Every structure is written in structure tokens, then in C-alpha cells.
Image (cartoon, rainbow, N blue to C red; front, side, top):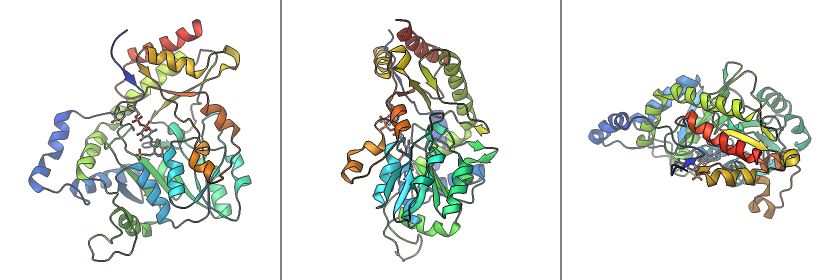
Length: 372
Ligand code: T4K
């Protein structure tokens, strides 16, 4: 066995010299942060790339979501999914809102849109769906429900940067979409994130929430804000990575296609559907290990992979609805499909620099478990 460790993700990085070249002028200007030139350039390039009405950058995806929800001035209940990274629920809770959990569909693990309306009460103010793994939610139906009930829609698109649905940018749906630019995401600024939103009147508030409550560039501090700015050092990484974005996605596509080719023929492994009308970014590769017919569960597979220095992750287990902080608040949920998937899913290594030889090695290990 080789000593090389394969983790679930590995950051896509530009050539070191390219990054050094990008940050060189900062040594002369001394401008490192506070909406400096790199930040502004990245904001502009992202705006153009997504043909976005409005975009604001943040120190990370979580703060983008948390402050985005705050800027909308929401109160009451928010319908969301339990099958996501904890950040989604935490952003809701930290706004003093109550998450109401909607089950997911077993095909692509996004919110089951047929179950949303049953959860709407007079206290419901918004829907926060997640484009989990980069699988796009049923944006058309969510849009119809939101319009009918006068609800805001804020997408957690942490995994969905660069994707389109029916040729339209994924951020063009709903009132707001958050993207994460964490080191482990398809586009990385080391830490970072943004929100794209329809209502330009929110910009001043969002920038204020991001920078100590100030109206930036004035002596006025009307908001209660925090410090959630993206630095120029981070934006510079984004600028470099953006130049290579298409190349990163093309490599990820090959990885995902090889996994599909190898794993779809193994009985007991269920893969997420390939969504029609979606230009994918191949962000994550989840596989559901159904032990019912084979007797092989995900723990066995995960252990065997780890024995071979391959570290898959249980994204997303436990469900957010099972968090102690939710239970303590008496938040209840009926989410059997999410529970089923969460107890069986493993996210396999997937990143642009993962070689097809390594994908084969991972598949060989999984196959060997089924052959025993
Ligand atoms: N909404 C959703 C749906 C999300 O998935 C996330 C984040 C957010 C919101 C919030 O966005 P951010 O505020 O993070 O921008 C990792 C990522 O840190 C997190 O960004 C991501 N989702 C989540 C799904 O995965 P952990 O707790 O699993 O991280 P950790 O440290 O265990 O790292 C996972 C693997 O990544 C390691 O096995 C090795 C690799 N890694 C990690 C780091 C930090 C690297 O190769 N380099 C690194 O620098 O959360």
C-alpha cells in the first residue's frame, strides 16, 4: 500500500508563480483589504460571469448566508432541508428564525418540493433550499410556491458555483443565492463566499453588515454589523483560480464520469441521478450504500477505504434536524428520506487533480468489498 493519502477534496490551486505575480503590487500599494482593487476586480468578474444583478463578497460562505438572511429582515419560520452542512441551519438559527425541516427526494437529495406546501403556516417567511452536491433544486416549482404564498427564497448554493439550469445561471432563481469559495470548493479564495441577489436596495445594508454596521465611506453607522469582509489576498486567489475554472471543471467531469462508469454496475450502490437541463460543476460525488440486498453498509466501505489511505466523508450525517441545538429548542421533523440517505451516503474523493488512476484505485477497493 502506498503512503499517499487521498482526502475527500483537495483545493484547486493556480501555479504558485501566478499567485505571487497577482499579489506583487500589494507590496507596493499596501492595500490589503476593505474593498481594495483585487476585491473589486473579483466582484466585477464574478458579476459579469454570472450576469448578476447584484453581488456582494464576504469572508466566507457562511457569513454571506447569515448576513444575507439578516438583510432581508425575516421573522418567524423558514422551510429548509436537514440534509446539508450545518452552516445552513446555523445561519437560520443565528438570525433568530425557526428552521422547519422539509424532507428530500431520493433521486438528487434536494428538497422534496411536493412536501413544502404542507409545512407552510402563517409564521412562514422564507424557503432556504440547498443545491446539495451541486444538484440543482426544482427551482421552477419552488418559485411558483414562493410566489403563491409570498415567501422569500434564499438558495444555499455553496456547492453550485458555475452551474446553469436550462441555460440560465443558477443564481438567477430566487431572491438570493449564496456561493462558497472555501478552499474545498470548485472556485476557491481559500476562505470566501458571496451572495447574488435581485434587490439592489439591499447592497448598502449588506456592505454595512459586513463592515461594522457602517455605510462604507461615510461617518454613519446605522446598522449593527460585524466584520465579514473578503481581503484582497483572498480575492487574488479567486482571480487566479477563475482563469483556470473551465479547466478545473473539465477535469472534475472526467473524475465523475469514471466513477459513474465503474460504480453504477455494482448492485447495492445507488448514485444520484444525472439531472436534465443542468450544466454541472461536478462538485461532489456521493454514493449511497444500500445494505438491504447486499449486507454491505457504508461503514464497512468507509473503513476499507481508510485502510487504503482513502478518506471518504459522511456528507451529510448527522442531519441538521438531529443537532442537539435543534432538539433543545424543541424543533421536530418528519424526514424519513433524508434519514435513509444520511445513514447510507458517503462522499467519495472528488477534485480536479484527482487522477483517473486514483479513481480506479478507489473503485477497486470498493469493488473488493463487494467481492468478499
Ligand atoms: N452551506 C453548505 C451546503 C456547505 O457545504 C458549506 C460549507 C457552507 C454552507 C458554508 O460555506 P463556508 O463558510 O465554508 O464557505 C468542509 C468545508 O470546510 C466547508 O466549506 C464545506 N461546506 C463542508 C461540506 O466541508 P469540514 O468540516 O468537513 O472540513 P474539514 O476540515 O474536515 O476538511 C474536509 C477535507 O478537506 C479534509 O479531509 C481535507 C480537505 N482540506 C480541508 C481544508 C480545510 C484541504 O484539502 N485543505 C484545507 O485547507 O467542512
